[in-house]
Image 1 (cartoon, rainbow, N blue to C red):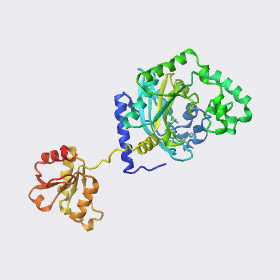
Image 2 (image 1 turned 90 degrees about the horizontal axis):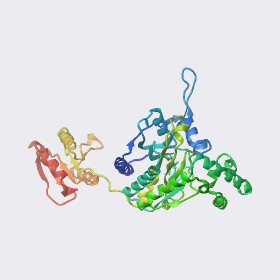
Image 3 (image 1 turned 135 degrees about the vertical axis):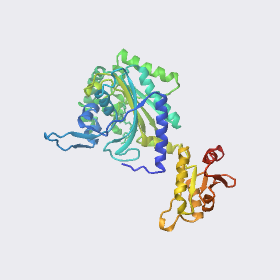
Image 4 (image 1 turned 90 degrees about the vertical axis):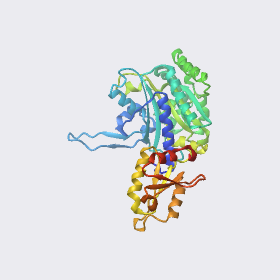
Length: 426
Ligand code: HAM
């Protein structure tokens, strides 16, 4: 779990602003749900034999209430289950489908390594109540647009279709028969999953089992016409916009709630944790957790992983600096100086006050204050000299471009603000 301090936090804010702008353009609205949910929600929603539910959740028993009943609670390991719970609890789809997004911390007790943390952050988008392939495509395009806006390069899109439950069932039987016939080649993990979740064996990271997994019966061969058509329409929309993808028949995702389209955006540059974004359709989840049946599709990206890529690809934006740094030689001038700064800030000026570490020492020398002003990155120094203030004036001095200092009347701060905000020093 990480602390995020400046200047790193500025990068987070930059990304969050981009996300908000794109979500607004695409008509996705913000949703916020609690960090804690009943453990049962995740067990039912994500699947009992997923890694997350089996070993990665931070779960605890709450204090018992007066009746002696205690809730089993978990820190959310992902955002979809909570959004689905909220949507059904509030009958939020009563008048039709909804497009939602969130940016929030998630918790998984994984083995920490680069790009994998125990508290991490996701930006997620969920479109609930829409069944058509155009919404799957919209989702993928939305994520793709975010990469464009951020400037990310070399992100590949992998697509697969998991079909419908009955198609998966037939494939599952074929898969179990195939793995049983090759049981001597299965590792412990695969043996355990053989009857509970054989599809996940295809996702094995064990090099010794790659060949076996590659040769296994393909789900695609078990899909019916409707599922195939859905998948083709998703691809037709992507193609019309020049978005490229690879079909990855082994892409099964680590959560059990998916059907039809699943996808991941992957970067080679991040090593083993290369998946920056994953998602897909989950038409049965809402009903499964007890809501009124409704189709849905969504994705989430890992903020830490995307920011790692941003740094890797040197897309880091310039640091934000104040426009003006207030130099106050004598502490007696502080009330007047701070009042002026408040007024300037209300006019849209980003202003930083010089502050001394030890007030017994006074405000510090003129020179040391100018040094701080320079380090702040401000374009201007606003000097609250005692003599000037006595005359009702303040001096504005450029720090990063040529020019003399100019005196402004305290009674005319419009002119002062206009000068600070003029393009000359931007
Ligand atoms: P997920 O694939 O489990 O999907 O997670 C989505 C993304 O979160 C991953 O691709 C990765 O970038 C990031 N991520 C996951 N675990 C960690 C970790 N321990 N440290 C850092 N980043 C991590 C979901 O969570 C689904 N809820 C996505 C979804 C939304 N499907 C439908 N709607």
